[in-house]
Length: 176
Length: 172
Image (cartoon, rainbow over all chains, first blue to last red):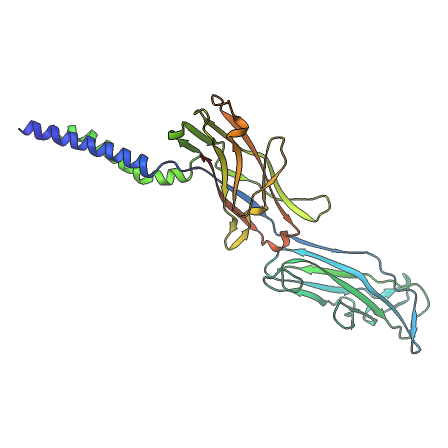
């Protein structure tokens, strides 16, 4: 009798094991061949100017005022996926003939597409041209590709010596 | 004596129970798929495809990631006149909360042109009509992948993006 019970117990265990196997096959089949695909988006900061030379000549006259102006003379091209903000600063050296004749760069005025003219900072100092803040996809709001047109205006004070003057203007793109 | 006899049974029972418990997790990362009822199977060569860093197009207007023959699909359906399809199912690429939509992904087989993955993330890679009469053959499908972000890279924050994909045989 005890032997019969033991055998029945074993059959029951075997039955349970087979049940397990069939349950596994029925409810948890290998569902698919899976894989993951990765790609890396690098931090992108591209900043370049449309030209490396701007000529303010020839001088113009309006209401007896002589001035030099070149509208949309330089285009600043910006391309970044930076999400934490950025700034563009400008600085310039004084206008010089290459010899000992010079005048302050702050006599030169500049403006972006939709702002009014403002004087350049003195040589060695910076002024902010544009900034991008967190999030967004367009200029002035952080990420994106955009361009800023810069116009220049120079009204001589009248104390400048004659000659071809040039100055180096530097735009710097700052990211944190 | 009694313990010695029940020991092997307990061991088998524990093994099967463990496999029952862990099988879903094993299946989720599996590179094989079997279809016993259709006498068919499918296997992929890898469970990770890394497209790496982007390249820029010649004109610089867009960026793309490409990996030629990144993955090979081996499959066979031995049942004659059984229609079947090999399908790719893919989710969007994610890096934290940032996303690249899956319809930026293209795929192609050797010698073909790139096909765009539709927004649904489901694409038919192969079908029985193209392989009729080849039931005894194991078929190979080398897949190349390309992700293109046209003028968009600057809108996608930096990071490592990952998408989960499955390749299955479908029997219509």
